[in-house]
Image 1 (cartoon, helix red, strand yellow):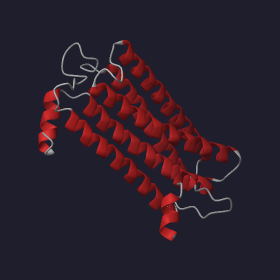
Image 2: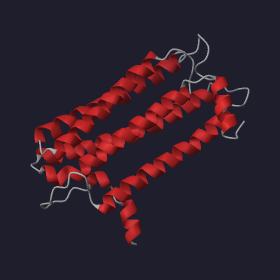
Image 3: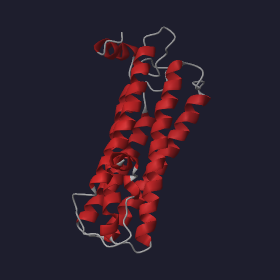
Image 4: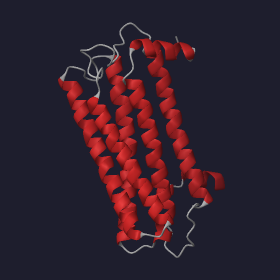
Length: 225
């Protein structure tokens, strides 16, 4: 039962009500376990979808979104722009965590505010990208590649929005007078989560803008060709 409790705990909400000794490198063991378990579950889910994506990409009706001049992501300034926003969001959250370690409340508030705001900007940018594809005739049901693009980016945006809710909670707690020590665990967890989602997005960006030839090479390397 102790193991189950640790796995179901929400680390970003782990903010004790009473005084807590500040530990710039730690967090409670249960919070660390829960965060690692959460990231492991997300990773496994995306890996399974990656496998189905690579397998499906080897069928004749799969039309990649890049590789030819007329395809929407042969040149991908939209995705580069959203990537830059997410990099900035991750950097802001890292700044918040550094401020926790140096006991600077203003830096923490600024970091999580900017990180959360830029995450919302990223989600809105993704929404405009989805509309852009639909207006070009690349709707969800038009082609398997389109469906996978919406699936991958939609799931990523959903996980990022969940992180934004956690950041809002931290912001509210600080605004109500909680000390840096009381939110240290939550800020560290949110920062780790932001870095993870950035790394995941970079992988998605690479995967979704490749050519059919690249998919064939990757699938063959994974034994899926």
